[in-house]
Image 1 (cartoon, rainbow, N blue to C red):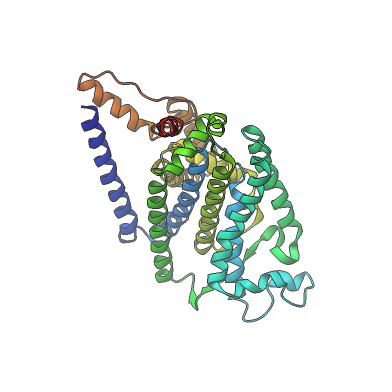
Image 2: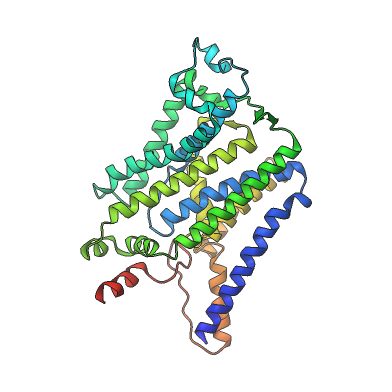
Length: 378
């Protein structure tokens, strides 16, 4: 009976994924151009949330610096677009700052493929460097989270202070074209939306495959008991650096897509507050579920937009109340409702059920440590 119930829930989940993908791809048929642009921005946030869920939900590492990786990817794309909109001249903020020629590190961004590659590699490389220093020193838990916040402060201060190279507080903006097409053209915005939706689907499928591999079981073992994993012969540091780099690369990818839809990137979008908001998306959606991270990013940002439009003077109170309600009554996030429904279904069949209500996370599945220990004992 338990196997039949699991298969039933799994089949319903697959149908739900397909319906969600179909809804995203068909959204242009029912949504205005303005709302479609907002939805595209939310989908780029969902890509970042998947990466954050991999490192926090499955590995147990809370990073409060994802805004830095997001910003690095966004700046890479913005620099390419800016160079394509200046007709061979220096970007305006460089001229205002007294520069007479383009800095050497701006030169690679003339190429779109190279800009995309750097938008993925730079965040990943920074994550590897930070991870190598911290993980090998056995820094984890709240201390690691504090270090990532320090990274945010350092990066934002650096980007604000280098007005001549980064645009300072205003950031990089004023770009109008991509491949010769106007970014304000509704047809171009439609194509960019579809690209973002397809990229989100591909990233989700990749993450879904990844969490079913032996690598993901090692990640869950790190979350459940890192010292035990180290004792049986595994090196948790390598696994943590890889997943941290992967989450940073996904954040960079999200930043590049974000710039295409919004048309600006500034240091304020890399700050501590945006980084904490990113964690809230995953926490409210349901960490350790992937789909919860996606829904959390989309729904929370949609609610934020809706509340701010309907109640411009009090929307922050509504958002605060929403966060409190979810944290108090659904500590496992919105996806914990699925667990509650499964428990009710099992109770109706007459079987005694237990629901995982661990603090700070939703249902993640079989313990990675138990799986690895079984394989080791063999």
